[in-house]
Image 1 (cartoon, rainbow, N blue to C red):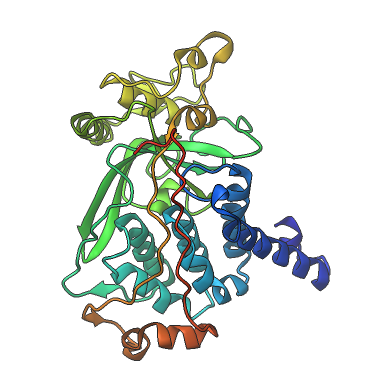
Image 2: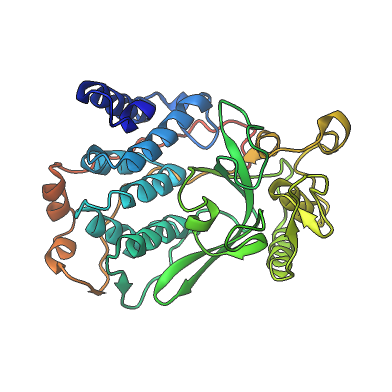
Amino acid sequence: MEQALNQGGSAATREAAVNELLANIENYQSAGTANKGPYEDNLKARLKAIDSIWSLGQIGDPRLMAKLTKFYSQSDDVLKVNLIISIGKLKNNTKAGPYLFDIAADARETEVVRAAAFELLEQIGYPSTVINLKRSAKIGIEKADLIYTGGITGSISGWFSPDLPVGHAGLFVGTEVKDGKIKLLIADCVPDNFKPGGVRNIDSWYNFTHHYMYPYYGNRTTPVKPTAAQRERIARLGIAMGKMGLHYSDTHFSQKGPQDFDCVGYTEFLYEAVGLNPTENSYETGTGWPLTPWEQFIAVKPYAAAAPSAIIVPSHNIVMPSQAIITNGFNALGGAFGTIGLRAPEVNTNIQPEIIE
């Protein structure tokens, strides 16, 4: 990515860097079934794919959009969210709006994916009103799952794995419909100088990923799966505490409160309140202190993800310009992108036993 962003470098160097990023995605998606699914045998390959998607959006290379149909049709929800955010960064690409609208309006996409599409439509200034918005059959993340993003948000600079730079943990509460759009509900804790800051409730990927600065790395939960009642209690506690004006601990001496928290300590606190412990306590004291988001990430288990599925053109009545693009569906979009169509996705059936069902 540094090569691609270096405007002082040669065109050939930049071209090679972009091609390498595209290859990371294609290599991951074309790998065998052992490298697919919610638990990755090769986690580094998945990381490379996620970070490459992010990088292509960050540098604004239009080839991400040109290959989007293929990438999207072969992606699970985590990759889809990252793809959606990345194409939304291509501000000069007029093809992004219609594509994002199709995703946002399609009730057969999960709500967390559609929420990302609605957000990016707003970010690029494209109309996003859907008459009689239909909720999705699946949310995509279960209530009270732990969710993770990258960078140093809410954590200690540099204290994360070089293989998977998890830097911030949060709690997924659910989704809701506001003004004809699907919104997320997330509880997390960030430095007090953030807007909003401290222990907070937020309603967007934008805030959770610190203004789309870092990728989204997925959702996990404890090896002993929370019951429905425990999930409800965790979620309600998170919402209640987000309204109390509690602060972030810059020193990390008070990771789990009761007044000051850091991001990973806050999620530990919420789970421990119902008798669950995401991370072994030795990480929180003595030589194990402080607990980091990466340590929690590897201690909890990936939650079974939805199988990859192709985008389906919505049948809703819509209010927006360029009706022909939407009503002609993927024939029109495929022509606009220079693509022929979608291939049936490869579905992984070899789920490893440590995955929580």
